Length: 210
Figure 1 (cartoon, rainbow, N blue to C red):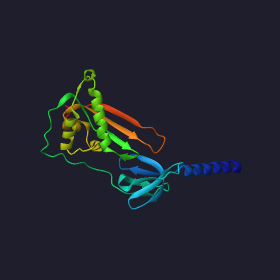
Figure 2 (spheres, one colour):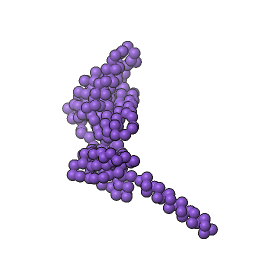
Figure 3 (cartoon, rainbow, N blue to C red):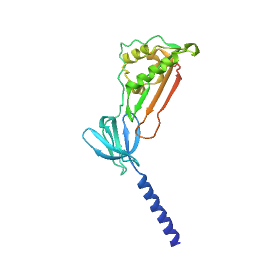
Figure 4 (tube, rainbow, N blue to C red):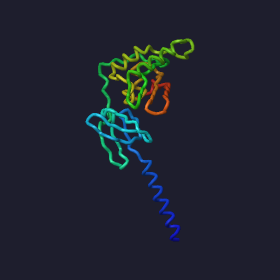
């Protein structure tokens, strides 16, 4: 019996030891990304860290970090996540709704863990022009992206991440299109992770009351 108890105690210690070795600090980025790292230094404007199993030091600006959860369990907060949205001006004129028209929205673009809104606009433009190469193959018509961007900006939406604060039914009303195309692209050159991209098309019930 004593021998069995010693074995159980031994494996319990081994288990906790392995977990301790695998534990890591976690950086929570303001764009929603969470990365497992070893934090080396926290300076006035930057945070220096290494990825697990690597020696290369990486630096990120504090303004791009929401918080760090250290492997000890302690948390350090840097910036508050966005909790609200800019109110749509009462003077905003909603366009005529075209339920069977599509609108390509700005893509979310994350480059090496940081938000890259300009690249997101470029991805939106590329996707739109790719569709327009052979418009006869499209089952619906698509709104010109300049019109889409103009309407979004009038409503106070200036980048892809702002879209998270709205329901798709509301975005559809803002741009005047019942079919919305959204996408996210992540590119990470810091490791062997290859770039990934994806898009989704949503048919919005424009007759649904909110």
